[in-house]
Image (cartoon, rainbow, N blue to C red):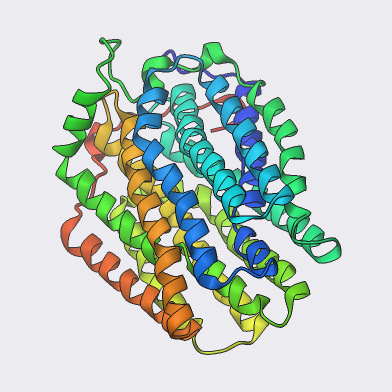
Amino acid sequence: MREEYKPSKRSLRGLDWLYFFLADIQTGVGPFLAVYLASQKWNPEQVGIALTIGGLAGVVTQIPAGAVVDRAHRKRLLVLGGLIALAVGSLLLALWPTFRVVIAGQILIGGAGAILVPTVNAITLGLVGAAAFDRRFGRNQGFNSAGNFFAAVIMGSVGYFLSARGIFFVAPFLAWPCVAALFSISNKEISFEGARGAATDAEDKTGVSGIKSLLKNYTLLLFAGCAFLFHFSNAAMLPLLGQMLAHGRKAAAAPFMSACILVTQLVIAASAAWIGRTAARIGRKPLLLIGFGVLPIRGALYTLTTSIPFLISIQFLDGVANAIFGVVSILVVADLTRGTGRFNLAQGGLATAVGIGASVSTTYAGVLVQHLSYKAGFLGLAVVAVFAWMLLFFKVPETLAWDKLPQPAKVPGGAY
């Protein structure tokens, strides 16, 4: 680990709470949207289209956003701008749930996500350096999932006791503690070169040449293909489940969705730090094969029953899959861009693949449900998951190079 990576306890604790409260806001404007729109008498196909357009808004900004993050010295201001956009988008959804306004809100939210995710990951890398990134990023995801858990309780309660619309009024208020956590991180402690994965202080060459270099990285491209298929299969499963259960029992839909999220986030919060440590010890691919492998099983299980307790228990598999992908996918990107100075641009490329997969997923599932059945929708998603696992198993090599990793230094208080 390089000598200059000596973040203070205050900055590291701020990073913990930044991930926690950022998850609160994103939970408020994400998973509950399908339930909310269904309560406004939108049909499954319309819901799918709205979610797809919002996802595509994030997709088209991912790579430019990654390039901006690579170049930006004041990364905290980028996060602040993203938080404002999320709050405004959430209020639009709450106040005017018409098609045009919902699309505008989704565009704001999608664009904000394209900036927020790579920027907070870059802040992490810039604070602790590459050698400590595995352990620290696993910890980050644990706090992120704890935040999702906290937000799911709040949002589910608001949806049940007040209304689904009330959820979107709560989300902007959760931005305030997120801002406080953000500015407790010292900008001076964030290494500019470290935050973009550069080995030296060489001249910044992100942009067109950076994109060309990524296109020559065939392992990264293959992994992006896997990520596309993973989210093609995964993204629509929980919204589809929420829509199915909203019919005939609208009051129970929001707390059911909350319970599903709670199970998923408990699994992630409990396992994320362990996944980060394990990925450094045994490699990335074994864990990824497990995460990809449970996805088709989950899709198939959804078709076997309408029992709410059983459906909620299936979310354990969702937690396993998302915990592994959420942690290990970013570690793979860090592996493949180490020393290039293009970590954030590569994050943007991966997020583009993820966003396209997630966007197509909701429309694909919505059409299957509209013209066939909910069972056909879940089975169709499970088939895509099988192809994702096969591509990962046969084509993507292990990316961790054990012999090139320095040992991370210890930080007082164990904040890494």
